[in-house]
Image: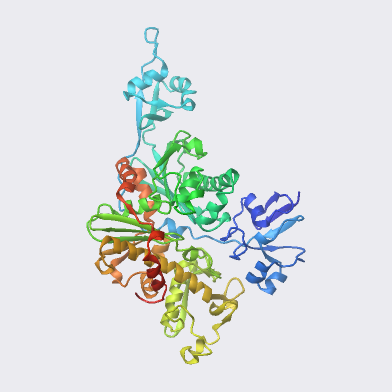
Length: 612
């Protein structure tokens, strides 16, 4: 079989001839961004083939790569198949996960009321006149009727007792003994809260005795190899059990790597981690649990389950205490998942008496409105534009991404993540750029660029060379090739603006439908909460300028950080809050927008770049 070597990571793998390079990278555990699941439409899986590069480019490569790049060996991994030994250079992209792990949340203090309780006991020794079995001796001392214990914990129990002078600690969760440990370990009680995002996975290690977060870590969701959005992943999973297992294995592997990182940071032993509580959208929940999500994609969007699921760590292969509990919080509907439950928990929307809206902006936009004693939620297919997908030079929030753009003193001013040289533009930068070019008069409210040939007077002299004709219409050069880190112009295209209009129109229309159903208007809202990393970094002034949000006073719009992740931490730390989370789906009214005849009219009006 041919051998493929990936540099600079120096990973080798033998693959069957005919395997495309995106699949080979996936098999080697290499992450190559590919938003379109290998269809050749996104142009993001760029790699460089070293040595003999005498090949004919595909139509997709000719569309996304310049002639100079093709001559230099650049290709799209999904378009190249392995027919010989190859050396492949993979561009390193430094993800800005710290941006998500350091978000200021809305939860000031967690409540210490853990499900797992640890009890230290000193047992009497057996004697001829007291031949009580070891386990029964322990259970009698604990005085908890109906306690169950796993065989794996019982197998070494006799020796454990005798080697530790009958002094042990039992970790209890409900009616089950999770762990039996030597001596008194009551000061060691830990759990991990996870936010399993479509793009990013974040974990927080919590000391359950004090309900304090002692470490955080995050990684890219490696399921991205099968597409940037949930529909792509559902489609892959529907291809059979092997495909479903691929997706589950990817997310479990990433979660285990995060757990390993958290334990390394804190030197906590893995067997002292007894619980994992996770939130995510409904598709992520199914894939994490290895449940077929096929019927989430077509109407009527029916999930396999919506309740909270609880399994043993060993059943999923998670690297905490093997008898530890894994709880994925409940979903509300096919496209409103437990991440929305987390947002409601963290913001207290189920307890508020005022009129409030929460928006978690991503590939799917989840929206919640609390008003007039009702709690309502919906999801909108905003598309992946806010995550940088389907944007010509779009990218995730990572070093070198344009994250800020202003029109100041007649010039376009840019800000890049980590102050690095520009390599692309992320979601917050996309919104900023549209707002800045609107302020500069270069974009019409309809979303079209001003035609510099028909209306030369509308284009200032310093922008005349930057606003130019591209392959699909006019485009604006944000960063010229000589100043970018890629050696090519970084542009905002007419197609990019259309993708942004579709995304922001869907969010706005979804919010208007919820408000209409609640019997209130936008002006009646006391607060609009923006959740998630995107909501935290998008500038509300820009969001208002392009009409993503209704025209409210900026002080009514509040970023609440990673509220979904905060909700998972709350549910991990407190059994009372977890019970509240499990009961929430019955209290939330779900609105299915696809059945609303008024959605399309509002959506079309909301696509315009103007305050509505």
